[in-house]
Image 1 (cartoon, rainbow, N blue to C red):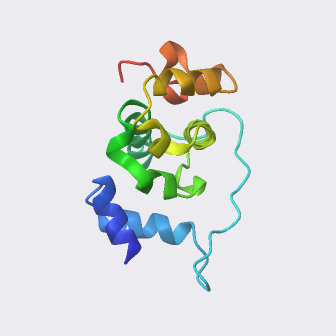
Image 2 (cartoon, rainbow, N blue to C red):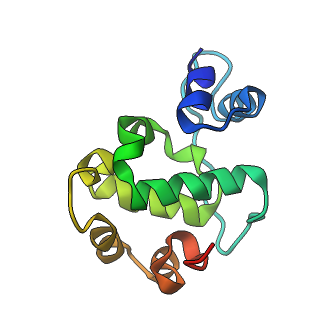
Length: 135
């Protein structure tokens, strides 16, 4: 099952969590992704929520060590990133060619900062999604 493989690829090691998250983002009939809900303005998420922390850590790898994630990250549907700011960072990464393009590219993080549409995405200290660079 894809969700079990995804669990191991991302290092979450909680198959039930991943399966529940995948089920929430797919329809029961054909397994096609559901329409993503409109992203609310502002932080409508709990930064200490375990799912949000996983999103954050995954984005840190995508920005800092893209080769570690490879095409697995690029294949993730946008709906996986439930925190609005995380989704915006993922869109910037996708627009820059995905982590596959960043893996062999020097200046990847700088290119992402330059491609970010606003300060919310660049964040203070240029950390993704507005968290402090020391998080």
